Every structure is written in C-alpha cells, then in structure tokens.
Amino acid sequence: MQHHLWTTLGRPALVVSVAALLAACANMPGESASAALQRANTAMGGTALKSISFAGNGTGATFGQAYLAGQAWPRITYSTFSRVADYENAAFREDAARSRAEPNGGGAVPLMGTGEQRTSGFMRGASAWNMVGPTPVAAPVAYDMRVHDLWTTPHGVIKAALANNATATMRTVDGKTFTAVSFSVPGRYRATALINAAGMVEQIESTQPHPVSGDTASVIRFSDYKDTGGVKFPMRIQQSMGGYPVLDLTVSDVKPNAPAGIEVPALVTAFAENVVASKVADGVWHLAGGSHNSVAIEMKDHIMVVESPLYDGRALPMLAEAKKLSPGKPIRFVVNSHHHFDHSGGLRSAVAEGATLVTSELARPFFQTTMANPNSIKPDAMQKSGKKAVITGVSGKRSFTDGARVVDVYYIEGSVHADGFLMVHLPKEKLLIEADAYTPGAPNAPAPAVPNALHVNLVQNIERLKLGVDQILPLHGRVVPVSELYAAIGKKM
Ligand SMILES: [Zn+2]
Image 1 (spheres, rainbow, N blue to C red):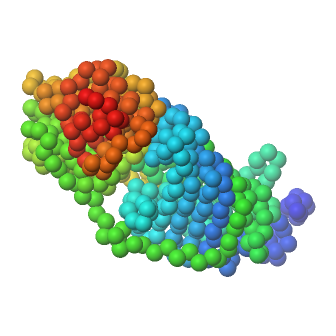
Image 2: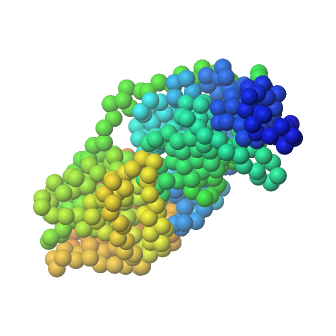
Image 3: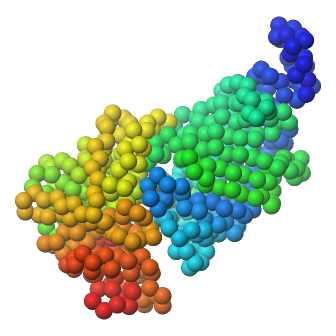
C-alpha cells in the first residue's frame, strides 16, 4: 500500500505517471474504474476465465414466499447448491437440493419434514427454463433474476463492468478503503462492486427489475477467497434480496473453465404464453394454459378477475382474454389470492388496466409500498401507464354483488402456506376458487397415505364456513368436482 504517495506528491504530479503507479500500487485512492477493474481482473485470475462452476451447501430462503406479507423470506436448507456461470455464452445454470428450515410460508418446497426437493434452473440468450424431471419447462418469469445472478458472480461483475462504461468512486467501510465501481445495463440491472486493496470483489450492491417489488435491491458479500489454479474465488457467499437474506453458501468446490454445455431446448424456444378459457358457468371462465390460472367473472357492468399472476407476459394476455369474453365491460376488480410473488406478479398489470386490487387486509400495507415502487430498469405496463394502484383489503369476509350474482371472498384460516390467504366462493354457482391450498393430482391417482396438511386445512375451512361447493376452480391445475378434494384426504363428504 502506498497511500502516502498521494499526500507527498499530490494529484498533478501523479497524472503524468498514472500508468506506472497503477502497476505498483495495490489500491489507489482515486483510481479510474478501468484501472480498478483491470487490477481486480488480474488479481482474481479473471482475464482468461470463460466460465466457472462452484458448489457447496448452506442456507437460503424462498424469495417472495413470506408467510405474512412484509416478513422475511422463509428459510430453507441447501444440502447441495451449485451454479455454472458461462460468461462466454451469457448462460447460467443453478442446481440445488433443498428442504424447509421452517414450517410456514410458500414456494414449491415440500412441507416441513416431508423431504427434500431437487431444482434445476437455466438461462441462455433470451430464454430461462427449469428441468422438471426430464422435461424442460419455460420459466420466463425467472429470466431477469438469472441474468442478474450470472453477472453478479465475482468475475462476472468485473466482465460486465468492463463492458458497460463503469465509473468509480472511493468508499471507506469500517476503516477499509474500496474502489466502488458502478455501472448499469439498461433493461437488466444496475450494480456497484466494491474492490478491495488486494483486488478482490468483496461486495456487490445491485438493483434488478421485479414484477411485484419493482426495482429490487440485493447486497452480495464475498469472503474467504481461495486460489484454484490461479483463479481466486470466495469460499463464502452471502446475499440479501428485498431486504432479507436469500443465500448463505459455503463453497467447497470451484472449477474454472469447466465446460458449461448449456443449450436452449427446442421446447423452450417454441414457448409462447397461451390463455385457454373454459366456461364453467354462465359468465364464469377458468383461464388456464400456463402454470398459473385465473378466473374471469362477468358482472352486470364490469368484470371481476380472480388472480393476475406471474408477470406482464402472462397477465396482459390473460386480462385481454377476460375482456374478449365479456365485450365492452371494464375489469373493475382483481382479487389476489395471496401475496406470494408468483400469484401477485400480474397485479401491476391489472393496475395498468385500471382495476382495483382486492387483497387481504394483512397484505394491503405491503402492496401499498411495493406498488409505489418504480420499475425503472425494465418499465412494465404499470410504470408506462403512469397509473397509481387503488387497493382495498378483506378481513374475514367480503361480498361483491351486482344485484344478481354474488362473489364472496373469505380468509382461509390456519394455513401454514400464508397468513392473509384468500379463497373466492360463488354461492349460487357452487364454485370455489383457491390457490395453493389444493392443486389436484393426476385424475384417478390414489390418495396419499398421509393426507396433505394444506388439503385438510382447506376442507376444514369449507366446513367451518358451511360453503356449498360442487366444483373447485384451482389456480394451479384442472377444474375438479369437490369430491376429488375429499378423496385426496380420504374423507367422506
Ligand atoms: Zn403461495
């Protein structure tokens, strides 16, 4: 460290010999972004690095799946966790084996104590997908996060900063001086990397677009750097996202320049959002065709939609289909089953349509906050519309009617999935609309030996409220007679 040079020589004298000093000086107060990035690239062995894979274990959290809106993300345990970052092809892969570390909250993780789940997620070019068993399934809603995760790896952030006109400032944290290198990739993310005196990236502060939370902040910390064949990589990676922890990984294996072999499957290239409407009763349509369904209900002078999920890419064609089915009527209300991000990712799209959001009173303050957030990095329909969200809450029960049809919105009490969990009942049509409490299995599948606690809880709520139900319109899966739910828990109706 030769910080004293600054005080003895002063800035004007240094200007003429910057290049010479850069080679000698470990961490130069006032160094340019490109000097800092070249210093880090050399120190971290990133210059010839085309790809890297790393693996380990630790803890994580299911981002967006809080039990109660606004709380920390539910904790999970990763018995294995690995990522492949292919910088040359802008491709990314993440594999994990995960289980719940706490009983409450959402996500597709098996219920507490019922086992571990393997996940495989990919991104390349303009595509994101998951492997579900042997089948690739397009996952467009995961795309932005995987782009972010690729370019916020320790070497990835240097490569991205070098390619995107980064600027530099000095920052002192706990007496330690860093060069803070900032850059922005329009439509994707913004990031600031803190490069220490040894040329290691110690921290990345980033912002990425999100369909629910808008511009969403992450802080990623890298520590305990080790050398693998001339490439330095941190043995510990900790990340928070949206204000709460999402990852604390202990890395045990690093493979620089391992072949990545990530190719977009043909099934994924061919993917397009598809809204398939089926009429369930007069003026009631189940809108399926993707991973998340919605229901359109025609009222006298408007439309109610139950659920606007995922992101604009799903929600906008779904809302357009609802309007096509009830020509000339506006979508006045969108009911949100619960605050989990996959189920609320299209609420901003519904605001752009002019709909009032109906959510649980428990989640209303959370949405009041997120809806006021800009989505400035990748402007969505709501951001472009300039509209402000109108949000109304449900406590216990709320009825909507046009004088003829009645639509009742109820709390599902006592579920481990979410607090402020809503279901919708049409008493005259005897229809029940619910998300995540019950997703029908394959037709004629035998009932599980141990009933699913969420299914049992849903039946308890139907019976507590004495709801007349003929059919269930799930927000995942197919429309079924209520007898299938009872059969799934081995209970007589
Ligand atoms: Zn959920």
